[in-house]
Image 1 (tube, rainbow, N blue to C red):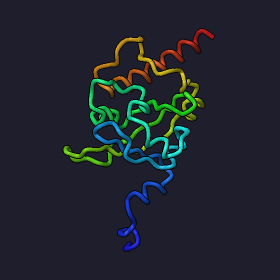
Image 2 (image 1 turned 90 degrees about the horizontal axis):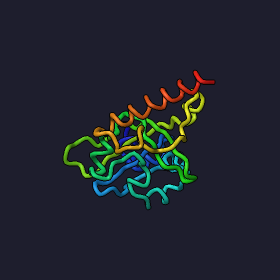
Image 3 (image 1 turned 135 degrees about the vertical axis):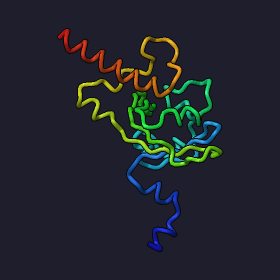
Length: 160
């Protein structure tokens, strides 16, 4: 137990095989681990040079990055891969929970392959459902987008 108590948090976050990303109040990337870099096709140093809106395509520019990130908690988000494709991942609630915290730290589960196996097209694009502005709630948008994807897929299946 003593060994675990003395292990620095950043060392643990880097070593776990779960994609992790920390974002500051200004939209800067404060931390990423190798697993997150691998998920988006970048080295961790490349991710650290990016900004929030370069990674999260669905994020409305009018809200603070931390508000948007908290709004995405426990939903499927679309992330930009280095090759131009879209990675869909389930994003956790921030591990940094106090109201006055100036950063958010979230873990991700890549669902892209699972969505392909289920017959959904995870790299379709990043536009809104009807091509109009984003839904008022970021969480609603994520859920509506998945519902629209399911409806489009089912309609295409019934036509073929």
